[in-house]
Image (cartoon, rainbow, N blue to C red):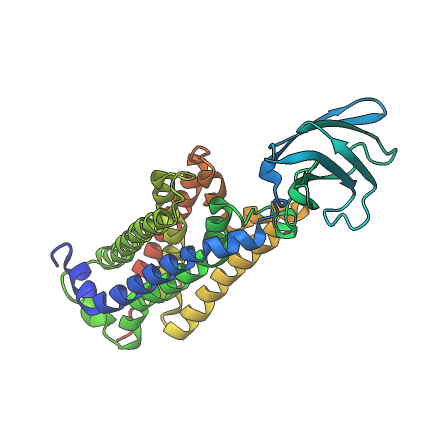
Amino acid sequence: MKIGNTILMELKNSWKGYLIFTLVVIIMIGGFIQIYPSVSSAFDEELDGAENIEIEIVEADEFMIVHLFWVEFPHANNYTLLVGKSPQMIVPVDKIEGIRDNEYTYSLPLEDNDNSPEWYFGILAVIDDEEDLSTEFVGMESNVDRISFLEESFGIDYSSIHGFLSVLWSMWWFLLIGLYIVYISLNCVSKDYDEGRMDIILSKPISRRQYLLEKFSLVAIFTFFLLSIAGLITIASVHSLGELSNISASTLFITTLFSWPLFLVIIAVSFLSAVYFENSKKSVGFTFLIVLIQYGINMVGNMTDNLEHVKHYSIISYWNHESMLYGDAINWIDFAVLSVIVFILIFITLRIFENKDIPA
């Protein structure tokens, strides 16, 4: 059979499903990214008015010297400094009034059990309008970098576009695309077994190798096309939020495309399963189990640093989207590892398929 005929026949029968799923991915990615501003504000741990204050810390043997600088408020007669161990300042530890300049140096004793105790500094502008004495809140700053509970637990900063996209890719990108890729990969081969036409197909002038490689090539090409579209939609959606100044379009596109080897492994596992079991139900159950186990291992490895070594047993960890999002160089070793796995799985699948008796 002429090279490419199997691809064209399969595409003719499946193009509607491919198109529908592509539209679903476009809608979900575009919609998910659009909620970023709401999520960012919810997880933003910056203190109120922190942009109005600059702080410099100098630690001596027994004291911590805090240099505070803040924006000058118009009509302010003087300023009040509140010092406390929590941002609420319900009962401040110290209160310094009558500060004339928009800067102040404050010293604190270092605690024996903690060389860097957590302190908060609030600035109030005192305004005398000749009729009434009032205060305006200038801002608050701390001597420690504040992070949210989720960032401390999972190492992801949800308030930045990098962390938000990392959640998109680590939480459901693999499942959303991976499970559908499993379905179409298995369907490519298993339907020919289930409908009893495998012997008829192979009775034509087409080798088993050509049959399998063309089916694999179609799913691989579709996946590459899907990821390219997803990358462009990601860029457009991030651009609509005005965030391309924080992360480049090329970074978004390359990071998306470099998940392709990950999905090639999924395709290869699916084809191996379909050829080995010769039954769609068994193949689906086995392959879905493999995908879910891989996803679970990766999630467990992300929970704590003590379990981080577990992630190496999941193929998902070899698509290091977090480092690429932050501008790190592409890890070609991880790319090579996934590529080798794909070639090994395809080789095994071809050997099994070529040595199997095809049921009539």
